[in-house]
Image (cartoon, rainbow, N blue to C red; front, top):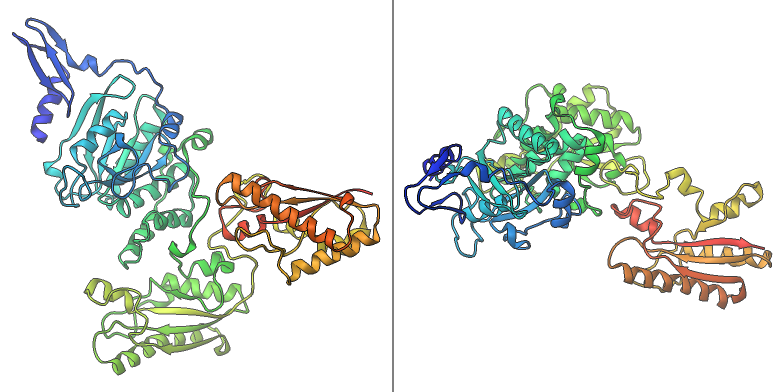
Length: 568
């Protein structure tokens, strides 16, 4: 098949002549018909000017792309008929690079083994969508795949689609894929690139993380968290730690730098809401975002590895996880830990408990010898208990021979964020100091100081999900009682009650719910003696967020009641 296409490719660059009416196929369903004696330059067909400007905006709107996890086609290849043959297809860079899988196993008409390159209709559909190239990230069965396609594109111009096989674990091939992406980014005439593996999870996630570091300025942990989210939950094998480390080690190439304005056009955001349970937590998180790790949490030292039956390992002082553990202890004087040792399930239970205990003590002894006091750590062996990987296979049993660090005590930080949650330039988001001064309690404590604002949040007034019923008890009710006391002392003061929701759900429902919550506070104050003539109320839905809606802690803050003092 490859030789046939190569032969056709050679014909495309010369004038073709047939002595009689003839037909030549130049794509899956694209043909050129020539009459007798007519000279046809097939290559000129590929130069037909497009009628549509196929830039990043055109693709973004065509596929309704919202964020990096948005799927144009789903796990079974459905969702966008013109891209059938792809699977789990998602944008990396709008109109420039896309990732996904090859829809073989779930194919409706040409079902075959999952371990194959993209099916021919998938290649042709990408060609018709204006893609310039596809990259298959594995070698298996590439020799039976076409090397590309030519087609009549959606904008009525001819398009040529090239198909490559690059190994995502080969640094030279990674460079070539970045080069392909760069050309598609800076040349409007070059269509997008589709980088795919089998499922659209791991290998395509790796090269996507690298692309996001190169072109969108993603940090190491942003890229790793992106990789985890993109696996759709299939991120628990110990072998995937290698890919996370490779993503972190990648350094962008200066020759592929692009302008900030181009980044702003091409780079999709991360999803608005992130399920932290799908993210991978390492000991480094205890250093860079200690507020993310709660007391009682167990952190696996993935880079600490023991051989079968071994209770020590070499160069412990240089092990990156041990180095980060020391940094965490240095950084937080209140941090107290338990060092837990574990084994796989090979051998007797009693022997495994002993081995695990000696593994934990090995790390414990090193920490004591490094100057950390005994009162800040203990150790314990748990044997084969609580395996985090399957014990069925040798390759996965290795991951169960591990050390875990349990957080026994630590400095308490606000929030429950998992990664560095800076403001991300969300509209109206306030910083922590501003937030402290935004509550009614702060107003009551400082009202005589002058220079106070006019709008304040009712502290801790928490409504149940989708409910507008004010709770009977809690600190929020105490704050409402203090508001009643204040209004009784300031008889001329009038207020506007504003209700807000987070951005979850349907806008119309949020608008209604926010109005009902504001009305509930209005009714509560009225029933406690505040004249209705002194109050108005409105619902503003999810508008005017004061915290990032992409995180749970931010959504909790945005579901609020604000009291606006409008005069006296």
